[in-house]
Amino acid sequence: MNMRHALLGLLASAAILPGAASAQTVLRLAENQPDSNPVTVAMYHFADLVKEYSGGEVEVQVFSGAQLGQEPETIEQAQAGIVDFTRVNSVGLANVSPSMGAFTLPYVFADWDHKYKVLDGDIGAEALADLEEVGLKGFAYMDAGSRSFYTVEGKTIASIDDMQGLKIRVQPAPISIRMMELLGAVPTPMNYGEVYSALQTGVIDGAENDFVSYHTSAHYEVAPNYVEDAHLSPPALLLMNKMRFDSLPPEQQEAITRAAVDAAMYERDLMREANEQARQTVTEGGATVTEIDNAPFQEAVQPIYEEFPDLMPLLERIRAAK
Image (cartoon, rainbow, N blue to C red; front, side, top):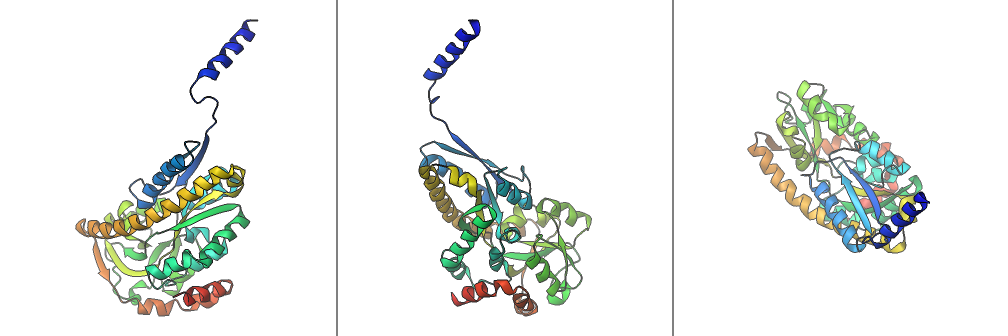
């Protein structure tokens, strides 16, 4: 009897608790960048928008700074449903969804307008749809800046000849590795979180990234020579476990999709501004930023387009979109 009375009391108490009858959907989002990075700022903004657009029914918890792993791990976690969301660069994503590889080819986009004409059009939509075949739901594309090379003291790149034999960290993806080989460097696949110490200890001679990541990762402290060749301009994007997305009520799906699009537009503007500011900050912090004629670099990587024949139809469409 005592147990019965206790249970009835507990149920009665729960009935009068504010909001006790309304269940909340809590979703976890894995982000490998620190809180200061524009993509992470945008993910917190996404979480706020989801809460607003869902009327408080959906809460997104953002785990930044690689708390849940680096991008290769979090892509797998999202596929397996271990995390609900992850924000990643398309370079690593090309390993699991090959059509994303077209956006990671060197010098594939002529400029900012061309890039988003492609990504916001049919080509970008088709690549997002392909993600569903590997258990992922992709949302609007975000900007990850233009990637250029940076090297340690004594390993300055003044021309393509200086690339010969340099050990350059790349994201673990076939296109990135092959591009580096064609440039004469030694590609060294490595997770992002290991790069600082590898530069510091001489395990690698350099790496490549946009100005924002170069700054927020503090890589400019140990690799102060930055050369603006802009060889890659791959988009970033937010992913969700497809089964988890499909399991949600339509109104929650709509809230998440709307929030993802709005957050992506917000991030693009934020990233452009942040890259300009980061360029100034690293220069003031002691880095040397050099503009370089990238025509020899573009010529050197030409064979890569023929070596990934499955991407040629997409590449031709991308070029035609100029």
